[in-house]
Figure 1 (tube, rainbow, N blue to C red):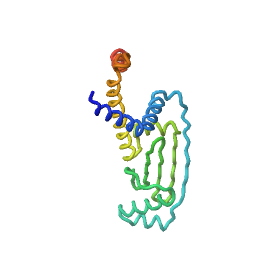
Figure 2: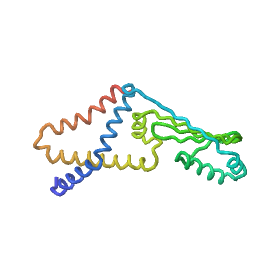
Figure 3: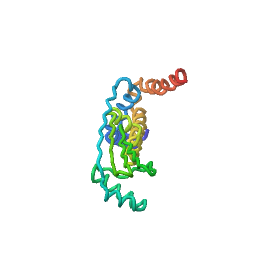
Figure 4: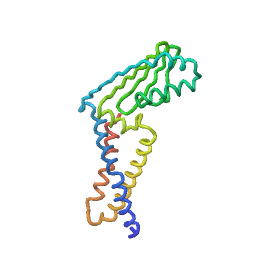
Length: 196
């Protein structure tokens, strides 16, 4: 291998390991928690809050067009509970139901149209549920979605440059390629034999 390529591989290898180390550790640990859910007992908890919005607010809401209704409701939800408007709302002539899905839990807001009764139920399935959902990118948002991509690229660079460095030093360690071959063949063999 050309010395410049070896130096470049070493540089990329340590930078990618530094950048991706915490994410690699996180996704490795959560791989275990996902693979062995029976090891971890879920401890879901819920909180329920309710309030009345008042006759004047309700009259203004009922007279408003759909866009203004959303603005009025968004203002109330933000000022009371720090919530905005979710992407999906189930609504009819009786009530509006707003679901806020998040890693490891769910919040549900119900607005009853004839009374102005507003309720919030928050369900939290525990820390393990949160990190498992983050591992999958489930309900985690766009920024986390791209973080997973960045972590994956860092791990790919770490692995590829690691192979290049193994090539450079393989002459000093005779077991290098047998171990690489074993690490490559074993998952394929187990898949071929045991996976239906």
